[in-house]
Length: 409
Length: 170
Image (cartoon, rainbow over all chains, first blue to last red; front, top):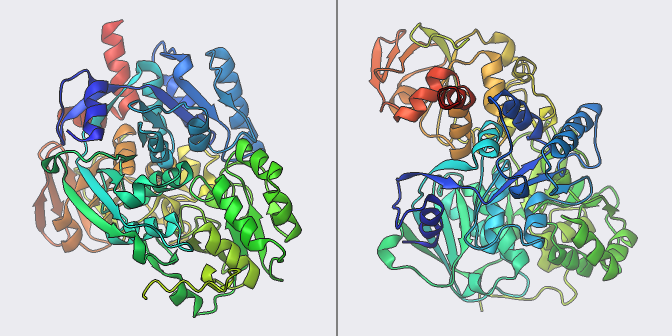
């Protein structure tokens, strides 16, 4: 069995499972955020004699509209606060706490081998700790809150091996963009993906979170980092990526899997109205660190606005004490409160029609950041470099050493 | 309140990778009323479409329908706009689950999608797994749903099915 199959077998109380089996598994953690809480609560209230099965396993987050953005948003948030009080849900992460997935991981709430469901597609990110973590909808979550179980079809597993090591100025996001481009938007649909091999084994926790979050964009049901390879027949397929040759990549509109070389996009001299360091995939401490490194002693280009939305309060505080936020603010960045921010255009950073944004966030589908807005996705280094020049830029162009890292040599 | 899919209904056709952002924009995430959601369906890519949908109309879609977020607002908006069934070459996982859970029939049939055009009238028999294109006089078969999904669709969704279980248990 693969790592995912082992977790699901345990969750279902079985010795073994195989891809295609439909199993009812016990949920270890259930996460609900403010975008889907109102619908979840509405459905919960429709279930006969509904009671929360285990309040200590339920986690509420206000991370999409934080602080509240409208009277409707705050009404939903108050509904959450009331529900949490009535049902003794103590794990309540209010406005400013940060993005659910990252906060869950920071607090060790998604442990290896656990089964985590969340009302957010990027719940896959919580697999970074070794949990089986997947997204479900509001109605399904209402049923989970009552029953404490969920049915799942056991997914086949795709093993993704990374050989070699990343060159200095390409980063993990660039490698993951290559993976996404290879699979396309549905290449891992209904599948578990498992990352391993030298390039992935060596990744930091931040890089693992980003990788597991972005796996959703190729359709993955869940994502894991697994050092030890299962017996080959256990996998549906095994693919290899060479990290040594990775260069900065940019996903062009309108799919996060439309990744092409940043140097090619840079040639087109695309003017940037907004640059955003944001989301559970692009505003972790290491993202703020690299942005500060690039923007140190520089200023954001005239006509470009740079948004920095640290993923969580802990990241915000760490970036504050390490001086990153000061560097970024001095360079002209707008620092916003922790949360999902510009990623979905829920609160800050909504684009006008025809405006261009380069963002380290997760998605660039039509309307994602405001109707008619045009979103390019890249690493936080690419976003910071583009903020400096005012054009979509290959980060190697603005690096202190001139970015001379010719990997072809 | 579910529309009778066995009666012929007009179909609307879309391409591949239609994302939840295109079905219902993030700015409407604070709505929970399905009719209100329905008024904004596909606003980003086909403004005004929702007013043209008649109750029971069918969506024909390419690959990976419902790509993207977990928002149940997407299938709810389609339901609120009057869509009675969705036929696609393939579905994104979360969207498919969300549809089943709210009682929206989701059918995988590449043949139907490839052979039918927008404006054709289709009827769907969920029991027998048969789709008729009444305009072109073509018919197609699809794999019947597993029992539990059939039950959700018949009852109008997961909550209704769950309540039936709970009524018998209590």
